[in-house]
Amino acid sequence: MHMLEVKDIHKSYGDLEVLKGISFSMNKGETAVIIGTSGTGKSTLLRCINQLHPPDKGEIWLDGVNITDPKIDINKIRQKIGFVFQEFNLFNHLTALRNVSIGLEKVKGFTKEKAEKKAIEELKRVGLKDQAKQYPAQLSGGQKQRVGIARALAMDPTIILFDEPTSALDPELIGDVLDVMKSLAHKVAMLVVTHEMGFARNVADEIIFMEGGVIVESGPPKQMFQNPKKARTKEFLGRISTLYGKD
Amino acid sequence: MESLPSLLDGLYITLILTFISLIAGLFLGIGLALGRVYGGKIVSAICIGYIEIIRGTPLLVQLFIIYFAFPSIGITLEAIDAALLGLSLNSGAYQAEYLRGSIQSIPSGQMVAARTIGMTKLQSIKNIVLPQALRISIPAWSNELIYLLKYTSIVYIIQVKELTAEGKFIAAETFKFLEIFAIIAIIYLVLTIVFSTIIEKFEKKLRIPGLGEKAKIGLRNAL
Image (cartoon, rainbow over all chains, first blue to last red; front, side, top):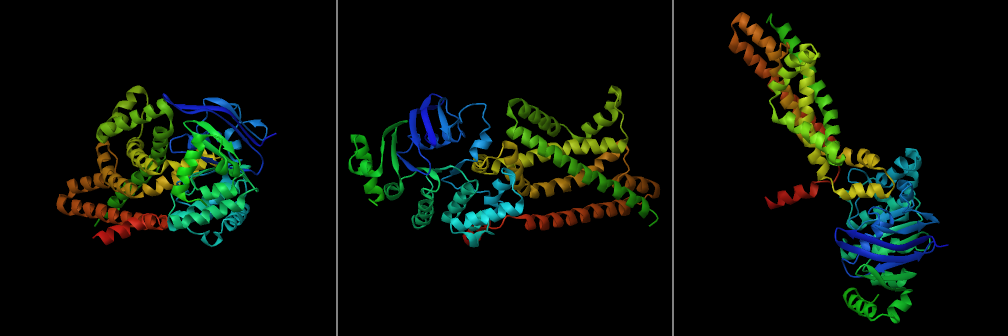
């Protein structure tokens, strides 16, 4: 049984059909990278998976549970699906530490002490123990994003969804965030929408190329980069490699 | 000088009216603002209707309705209670609008982020949106306090013996209009200065570190 199974997901906004039948699956601890041009439905797909935008049609199964079932308690399921945003979306009125601990306290029912102890551990994991007492406005973009990752990690998710986690960062700050993500590989499953081809090539177990609301092709990085089956995949990867560098 | 004790009595009533209405108005305002922003069509329409009716009619007319017209439908209130009710209902509508502005100024991504870690809508509002919205509303709230303090003087018309009413009574008896009303004006002035200073301190203490500082530095450089 796969940890995550996405079955024939459709999603429209008004007359515009953004997702036209997406199916794929992921195993425990696997890293999958979704690539594709802008406006192709990559972010929408992530938002369908954690039901921020429930799909119109299709099913999503996580750990053997159909989470698109309307009877399910979605707040409970969301604890198992971490989400990291392009724009960080940290809670501005809380310190880095509280950003990470508040979910443990309010959602998981930890005591404040226990929640903060675990939050410190998570901040250590992303290399920000010394910034625990700082507020988001006092952190750099890369630090903010690492707090965002720690916030997702703290809930002990089975999978974390990353929505272009480095797209809003200055180039010199991207590396820190990618290093943290790399360190999580095989410890927690990651589904990453990104244009960072180096990360895709070196860290991903599976690359999914999306265009026009469907999956054009998917496979392990080696196959996708060296022997893509579809001409469109080859063309896209060629173009993006000149843009973002080969590694 | 012999008029001082009754002025103090009046001042006491003025302060009671101001603070109770401010606090009651705050809770009413929070409810109305949340209802308006998050309430769905029907709740939102009810909140908007309330806010528009209260803001679109004079406070004096509202007080007359509560004090003089309510008895005809079987609700008779003491003057002071009618004043408290009228001022609270009125302030609630204004505070709702200040708060709504603050709530809507908070980036919606924070609410989304709260939902992604499993918070319910209510938990997200309580833990993420409100603590920030209330902070942003403090300057407007300071305004409201000052308005309310002065607006309480209007309730002398329904026979509440607050500061202005006491003053008018004493002045009419002693014919010392200039002295009495000058003293009263000074009392209001001192109170507004004291209140706004306290709230400004409070605002500084609650300011979120780092937030807004860059904008300020940018402004200073531009100047």
